[in-house]
Image (cartoon, rainbow, N blue to C red):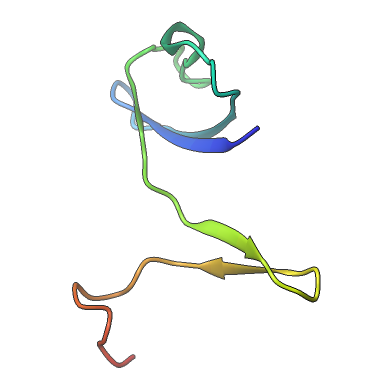
Length: 69
């Protein structure tokens, strides 16, 4: 099952939920305040490599993705 990141619109708490593809909106509640007003956030993801490890791929630091660090 995939893990999704959410942000509570009421208390601004961010949290992750492990949810199946058929999860209902009513099942998505903030663990801090109990509000159902939560918004799915974009998050980074991990990709497995041939050596069995995983590599974290963060979003580019600039709009074109070609900026030097």
